[in-house]
Amino acid sequence: MKSYKKPVLNVERFTANEFVAACGDSGVTYLFTCDAGGGKSGTVYLETNGSDGLQTGWGGDQSLGGYHACGTEHEADSDDAFLNGYYVTKEYVGVWPFGHYETTTTDVIVWRGPYNDNVHCTTNLDQDSWVTGKS
Image (cartoon, rainbow, N blue to C red; front, side, top):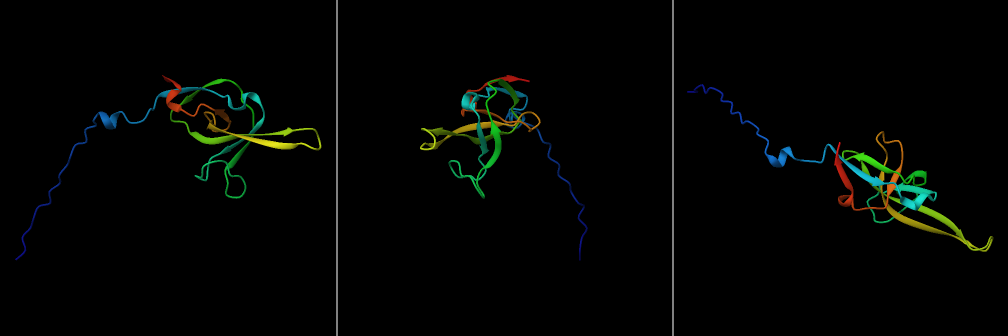
């Protein structure tokens, strides 16, 4: 013989604790200076392949094109994307036509602006040292 069992619904109330309520730095702004290369023209690449150092070509890091530092201190929201990248310059050394090009690669953090349509780079790779403020 089968007997009927009334369904029971157990409800647990979610109560946020300090660890859940304080996650992230939303509402914080970072101040940093766009200083990579000091205004000298170069090319910026994003680190996209997970391998240390700059690799270009098929499957390599993504070029963002020409760049020169604007020297401006920018205020960026902590929720914005801050990407690892490289600032690269090529300089002709020697007397033409007997010289050669030397390539210099500098690690940078890239911020693409509030609308993700611009390129600003800093050589200060320690984001914990950046000045912060509430927005």
